[in-house]
Length: 112
Length: 111
Image 1 (cartoon, rainbow over the protein chains, first blue to last red):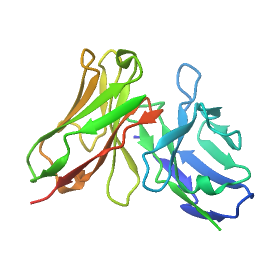
Image 2: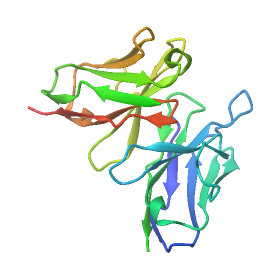
Image 3: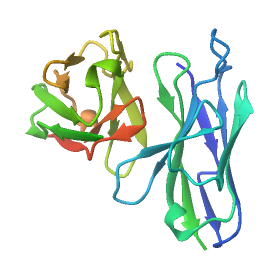
């Protein structure tokens, strides 16, 4: 199975500042169709998760453009510019290129 | 889009349970569906996936014990949980291709 390693486990960011989360996979996530099925999923406290980004950098409908995803092969990054209070919660990367799907352990974003 | 899970509860180790996920607001038969769980205070743990053509994939931890299925006529996704273990205790979410998630249903395995 592909192992997804996220860093840091937690970070504290002031409102208006930026945050960056790293996700590394144990093997390349580039699939035979040329696409890379790397997702970012967010869970606010007490709520169900929701997907923010798919295929590395494509934002889901309604996701603010303060969020961006970059990366390729095995190294991926979620960046949040101008952090807002509503962004606090846990962010997970999740690969869907190869079965079984696997999640990272999560990064908890706190507001300083 | 609405996904509503049901069927959770307290069950003894070794016993069985069947979860349901009622879907509405989209063409259910056209989408792959996931079950994902979250143990208390822990992260997300992917469980199983069924494609629109009913192909299935399972996490190693549940392979041979859990069965994912779907009834497109009823717009419903299922997860049959057999030979339950204490480590299966979690909130179980159904999700439409990770985009939309239900509110989750709690499964507690304890004697």
